[in-house]
Length: 182
Image 1 (cartoon, rainbow, N blue to C red):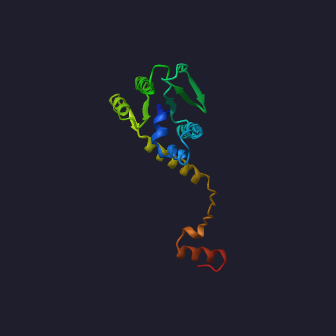
Image 2 (cartoon, rainbow, N blue to C red):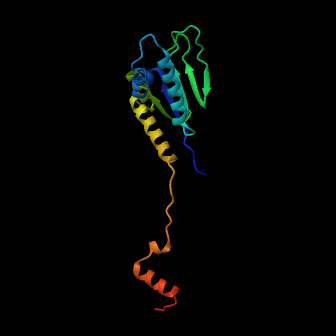
Image 3 (tube, one colour):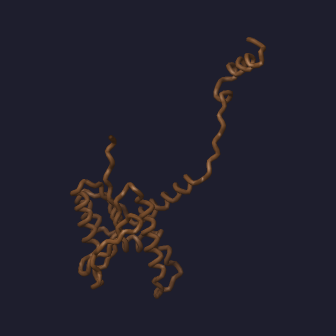
């Protein structure tokens, strides 16, 4: 029986939204007072993580909710991905580091997506892989390009025996078929 890999993807939500070109480009030409772009970018990130992680990764997106007195730190599931706002008084960085540590302790291959150098250094010390926000933006674009290529209709080519054998053998077979002998 083949052994399946246990993989965990942890995404630093606000960091990726601010640093990944795929998400920060949504804000171009938007006035500072319009936060609609940020909501659209956040939804786009969540959808991208859902698609990118698929069945291969146990994925969690962590947003910083430490400054919000109402934030409990409870996770919500969206398309199989956990979405977490850090609890009041705690940073997303601490939640990410804790999840990464627990993942490694439980035998997961862990990947943390962030451009925060301090978080990268901390999780690297735990034996965790890391990817920058821009690297994730590029990987997601590559993923969608591959999906689009997979959806392109393919016309199967008819490959006959005559196309696969040498011309001398083909001539002999035609002579036999036509009753001309050899």
